[in-house]
Length: 383
Image (cartoon, rainbow, N blue to C red):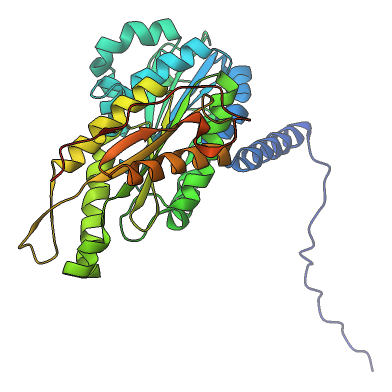
């Protein structure tokens, strides 16, 4: 008996073929782009992003200079310049962004997504921008509180200045930059959770320690002064004893908000703990530190603060101790110790006053070069 065999189902096995040269090139480009993005995402701060991005942009699109500015919900503002070799240009750019209400600061406060169409707003800054080598700018919105404005100029002959045909903004490198900055904004959000004081909403001691190291390194690198003020509210325990700790927290928030609005945008304002605050002031020497501290103390003393019951207007005075790098100290710990000693001197001298560090007050002149006594004057009439 003969049995007929069932017909076999055709197999669907994959057919392997040798990739064509075009396929190899396409895969190579995709791998290179992926490696480039991965390298960019390793950057952990704005300066590192600029240092990595600038050579790639310069090689691909002949970008001679790149400036990136970040603005986080009005709380802080940072900028980085690449290549970071022109000290005069850096000082000029820093003055633009610390000079108060000008066209560049408005670009950060307002919606920067429209900045390409609003270059006319920069008419007053067009000459210094061109002299500095920047001809283009655009904004990047991360979807949260962080905004970036990127300035650059291109020597690419294909760059006609038309935003719709801008080879820089339509290149894979620009998409890498957007992805990197958005990722950095997310990291900043997470960092803020651990660097923000829960009661006052300003930066805490951890953030102060990090920024102090950064600012000391920057001041040492560029040979510029750095001032530190440590502020302490006078007799603040009486507020807690008279009105309760909820009222004390409310007053702390009001004082922190008022001082934050009184210092410059480039200053770093933090709560060290309790009723003690600190202000780091880049590019500020002894004379400027003296004037800023006096004005700050007088402003706080003239302000009325409300208790939680809203039935009493409280007058708060502050004692301030100051120290300047490198005049008074050459290390982070010494700078804090000098400012703290000056604060204690201000307390002992009667409170409600500012005292700049006296070189002999710590009994150690290893890092001290300035001699002489700073006048001990009250910040405002005692109340």
